[in-house]
Length: 399
Ligand SMILES: Nc1ncnc2c1ncn2[C@@H]1O[C@H](COP(=O)(O)O)[C@@H](OP(=O)(O)O)[C@H]1O
Ligand SMILES: [Mg+2]
Ligand SMILES: [Mg+2]
Ligand SMILES: [Mg+2]
Image 1 (cartoon, rainbow, N blue to C red):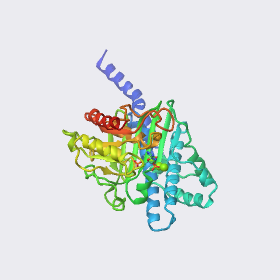
Image 2: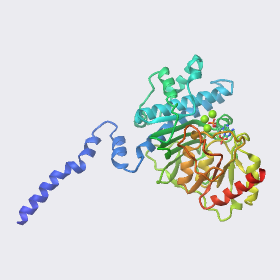
Image 3: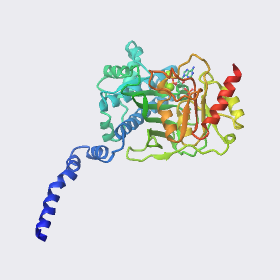
């Protein structure tokens, strides 16, 4: 074959292959919101990247709403009754998250904490929430568009809230939503979290936690949730994320979706005696006495750090604390999947182990509750067996 002939063949091949290699990207880049489309469909090839992206935006938008409720309540413009702001924040955040999920993943099932029944008979509450929901948007128009934009009207808002009524299970794709976890912390100006997880066939694949009142700095010392001094001012607000098999990250809650998260990992502790353990503020949610005995058995002398919500999972995942204990107070209480799905994945992806008091992994595939589990023991993977042994010694000694 002559030199010219070979040259011609290479040239023809190049002309034929160019549109195959670059055509879709060039075509997409000419569309409106091109940067968004090309970024998400062309460059993010890892599993669940689109789900992660939407979940992060949905949690960011819902957190804007919860912060507005908190500050408007503090100024006395929402209601004087402490119950109402919680309700308004819960319903509003749930409506916004479900709207985003329905727009992007219309076939997915949703398990969410709240239901709209109360709003269907209370016009005042309904219109207060609707005012907040319709006026809460992400600053970036392309991101807002990615979530499907505004909800049509107040009735559609109620229907969306009720879309969170799936019974759960271990088949197919199911999202778990806790629009405000740690309602008591939310009211106090302490810790709370906007929580979203995706389960596929009962296994958590994506977890996102928005914690408006945690310090952005991953290394900030873990502070007890005494409230009123940790609100979402300068330097506060963290978004924790994880995808199964891809690690866990944190980034400022106010950051743009372009900003990469920082990889986070649990602290490696040489001696459990140096560990920091955290637990609920509410004595009714976990057994403070048993937890103190376990800490003592492990040689821990520092007092526990008490904080509300799944901020505890995020805090240990980034090495600000080490152990999270949630021992049952009432033997009959069943933990809810939305209180744990995102946090469980974030801790495991950061190098932790999460089980119940019997050492079983949390089973998210049997319905709206963790009926197969009792309590939660979360610790760095290398130390988990020792912590669990101490848990069982203390519990066995009680029988
Ligand atoms: N008796 C109980 N035992 C354990 N958890 C309980 C409980 N009663 C309520 N909860 C759950 O505890 C969650 C708060 O956890 P924490 O104490 O870690 O902040 C609540 O979430 P909400 O605040 O979303 O209702 C609620 O679902
Ligand atoms: Mg909760
Ligand atoms: Mg809640
Ligand atoms: Mg609740």
